[in-house]
Length: 516
Image 1 (cartoon, helix red, strand yellow):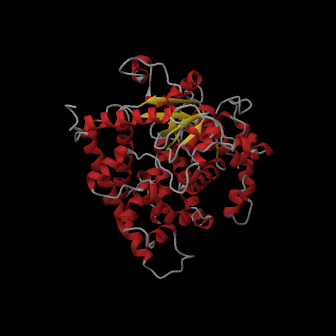
Image 2 (tube, rainbow, N blue to C red; image 1 turned 90 degrees about the vertical axis):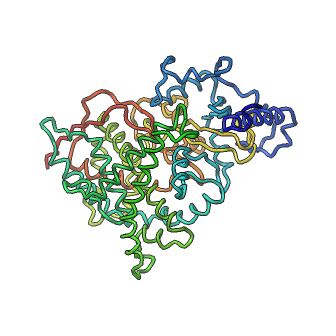
Image 3 (cartoon, rainbow, N blue to C red; image 1 turned 180 degrees about the vertical axis):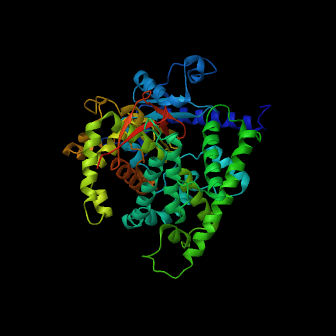
């Protein structure tokens, strides 16, 4: 007990107490616990202590598997999950640094149990490095770092504003304008090989520009030659945050105990992003004070007028929406274009659907939503290259997964997106890009619903901005595919992981102008 007074000692003691609790739970009659299963059948679950673990060594456990000595690369962590699943089965546990167990699950039945037990206030661990930085700065933690009733208070206030179709469709004209500006930029910058130099960076600027439209009701000018200083600082600080969060999330997290250089950089980047974000926030606040009906108000005007949120919470909401729109949307676009370059027949079909749409006198949100083949293309891309490879939860109550008792408070990581996306057990010809597989009646089969948990997640914590992201992607595809035939002639792209999925190689496409 010599070290009980310091932070390491406290964490060690907490781990020991948690282990003792698990042992006590294993020794009692588990049928007396209120548990959720995928079916109504009740049976004697096996104790948590019997959940399979990977092969481990004394003292260090399986930590060696996460080192370069074993060929581990963080960006391909989902490949290790596949290996673990093949060795241990669809449910296993592994001790994390600090002594806590993480339960990994991927079966459709377990996914159903996990998300159906969410309740009104699902619990998910925060991005600890971001939470740490924001606490140091004395600013709101943001929706992604909250759980329980505090999360519910904010989420229930913004859900009606962000998830109503009318709110999303109101931005179609502005988003299409951004997509058309991207095409103009591409045409002006095509080189002799019909490539746009650093196209991955161009996609990031497009994604930021799109996000600025609905977060601030303004154009940031990132697709023009004249980008103002404020917009440059927002994009620079946001990208810096994204980079540092990825770098400090894994490995030795010394920033928990010392004010490390990386944590100082993260705090500085967050502070800068908030300061310059407030420039546009104040403009939007002035606009929201105009007397207009709720029907005429834009999304940000409605959020700014929401009495349930403080000024600081509204500012952090704008900050988080910008961060969420960086890599996720741009990488989703890159993966989708890549799949279409490898499948020219599919590209031709979606282009024909686009041409039919463009013949309409007016493009409405309902028409965009009913683009059957494009919807199937996006779903098939997400199957082969899931934009998010896993989803986490804290068990809010005792549950049963794969026949094992999992105690309340256990950290659960659902890896079904990584494990089953190309699993022949669930998908015929899993390595073939076949949008048609999503257009038949089998997609309505309830058995398939939980095979993958989707890039936007499931349940009450499903991505808040998903409808905006999907509409942005469709606008991009319409603008690009109506002007270019897209090809790819470089190293094959694999799924890689940072905070979200990204292409392992730079998505440097060839854009051949269509003959009109």
